[in-house]
Length: 210
Image 1 (cartoon, rainbow, N blue to C red):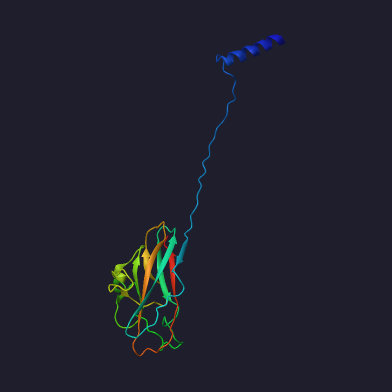
Image 2 (cartoon, rainbow, N blue to C red):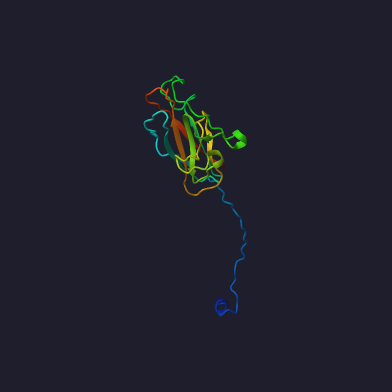
């Protein structure tokens, strides 16, 4: 009997190899489960305005002096970013003493909401300290700042620094590369301005737009 069983097993193996008999197989149940991977990339931004000091040089009353800063922003923000600026002093930007009556007068503080959103910057006249945005490869608002393209362009429009952070450039699109905004400063004083050294700090701020 044992020999007969061995012969049967051997015959089945031979037939299986020949493809005439299917070898026994185990039945398996299969079930799938999908998993979604999710993340939220956070907004990041860096700002560099090219140096902590802008020296406007020696000023002779009646002959304006100019200077500039180039602010470079890099961000991954989907909706772009806003660039703002303020003066750090509550009353005047460039001071000689704590007495505001001695210090250099600012032009009227920048207000982008004035004139139904056209802002209150104006072509240069008179005396005081003013600023303008004369170029930007992000977004330059020519309604705000005029059509000038250089720091001394007569088509520039100027305003004074506000005491609170106030937008001077709004870029409403994603930019994969760094973008720059060029800000010009212009200063003149009356002949009665007390001689001596004046200085003051302005602070730029870049804010992402979701």
